Amino acid sequence: MQDLIACGRAAIGPLRAFLSERDPSGIFLPRCQAVEVLTTLGAREELLDYLAHPPEEPDPVEQAGIDVVTSAVARALMEWPDDELFALLLQTARHKLLPGVVDALAQFGREEALPVLTAALAEDFCRAAAESGFRRLGDKTCAHLWQLARSPVPSVDRETEMSRRRRRSAVRLWGELCPCGEPWDILWPLTQDADDHVAFLACSLCLERVAACDAEQVSRRLVELLQSSDWLLRVEVEDLLAKHFARCGAVVEGALETASGTAAMALRCVIRKASAPNP
Image (cartoon, rainbow, N blue to C red; front, top):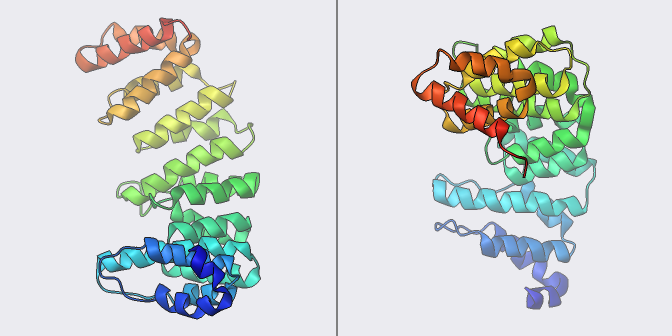
């Protein structure tokens, strides 16, 4: 790489051509290194040209490598953030959501990127970058996040897994970014959500942030969630009940009187965690 940098601008043309060369193996590291050299050489226009016209291949392995390079180019171009780049990133993201493109858009901190950031919340590889964008925008996104949290797609009965992931992220972000003050009666319906993860997050918000919430009702809902098929979620429920045992303990102990099998084991686990000394 240093030898290429030493060549100066004479290396820019060949490196730009190298970025678009086919590689059926999908190996992307050499092309990502080429992006680094082009950035060091100040080849903004060449990188913009690649982002505007990335190669497209029918082979999924080859295309995966191209997508990684395109992400690297998008991140590299943040050396020169301006309106032209923002518009191009938006155009690219509307065609295909890529982690580097979402990450670059997030760094702009502009509300025009909200539709892209919202869509990216549903994508595992883009979610962290999208959440970073919401954090940069801060409490301006509260109303949007709250609406998103309560809007399963296409419907409550037929919600897709992508919609569930997006809503879970929206609830977490809302709890993180938005000031306290939502009335208990607004939060309560979300604790009854058909998605166990959304319901758990809503219960957590109630216990952590709403002093006037009905702790008994929230506790009963959490006890119901101990029957979830997701064992990781059950562990989180146990931890939350144990953390707030002063408010939830009576319900937990009452439920244990009639519980059996796995449910009883979970309730006993809550009591053990609550009574364990703090480290």
